[in-house]
Amino acid sequence: NNKTEVEIGYHLLRKHWGKGYATEAAQKFRDYGFENNVADSLVSIIHPKNVPSKNVAGRIGMTLVVKNILFRDKDYNLFRITRKEWEAENKSKGKNPAFA
Image (cartoon, rainbow, N blue to C red; front, side, top):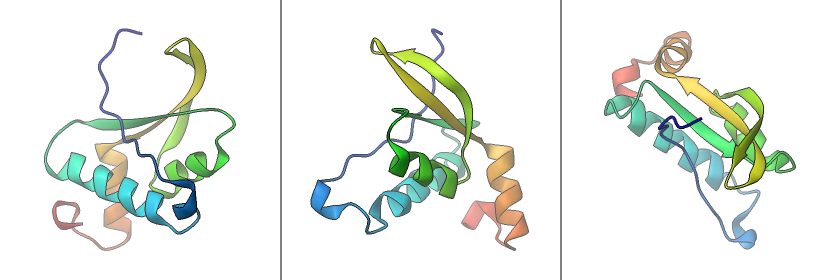
């Protein structure tokens, strides 16, 4: 929709799938983005059939906000986490979001 967003994205070789690397990387990207005031929200654009990546998005606190968006002429799902959601999650875990 002609809006600039900051996306958390990654690609792993198949031999590294299922080892938690994607979740760990996505968490670090998310934390870096919020700790360094890159944006007030972060998104991930995920193919609807990519269940493992949808699970990663959920594990880092993202929620599905748009089920079908057109991106590069294909349908995708848009997941998002806001700074407020991230701060609330860290607070509930007893962490200072500035030093998560």
